[in-house]
Image 1 (tube, rainbow, N blue to C red):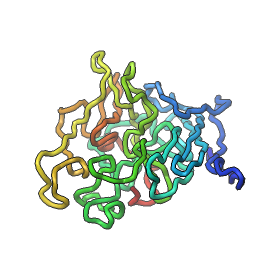
Image 2 (image 1 turned 45 degrees about the vertical axis):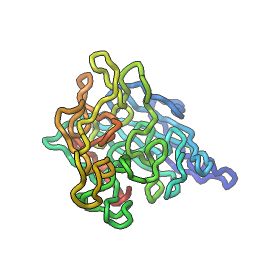
Image 3 (image 1 turned 90 degrees about the vertical axis):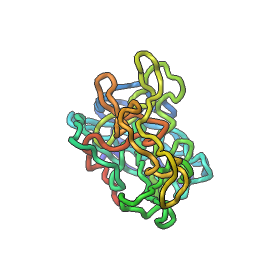
Image 4 (image 1 turned 135 degrees about the vertical axis):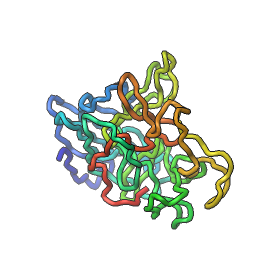
Length: 311
């Protein structure tokens, strides 16, 4: 195990998140990525091998944490291990429902991703991706209209009107980085991390900011369209009219069911991916599905959740 958790002195609560880790061969020191904007567009996970550190403050609780993330490779796969502390301040809203907690998490991705014959749907059983700052992406909410309090307990993926935490009138208590904490305190994104890549008028296409569970890279929002640098567009669109049952009302993006895929209507495919410079990868978008619509390849079992039903 690359990380070893050390208890912090009672007089230094800011060190409660500190993890001591072994550096990958050839790296003498950890690189501080606090607030860093990435630039590398390599889709090869081995090109991102590193041992990184960061400082982040829980702004609502005025507590500082030390982030740690290592990326290693054995040639056939890469492993990203972290304590789930982001490389930016967080909890900028009125406060998370669940207190933030340091984790010890590890994800393995294949170094040679392959497209499956048919896409694999997203589900509550699997985390979707991990970003290069060590924070995971978990897009699927466990809340549906008419099930419990609407925020948790909707474990049947066939239940209609599942909330989109990023959409419409959804109120999932996310912060300025489209993230919040799960019941066990794990900080995770639901969409664009609003970090890691230039969000406004970059000089070139966006870098790789993470890897999906199937091994394909995730790029930031901007693509090079014959010399024009612009945001990629999703091929999902809001349905017209009003919902025939359930919550009723207009299709406004509050629920996943409000959207429909129209092939060829945008830059991206049904899984929200495209080929850039000969390499397939997912792209962060402003509209649904935000990052991944499904898995083009086969997700690794290391992304399987310890228990289902967490938002």
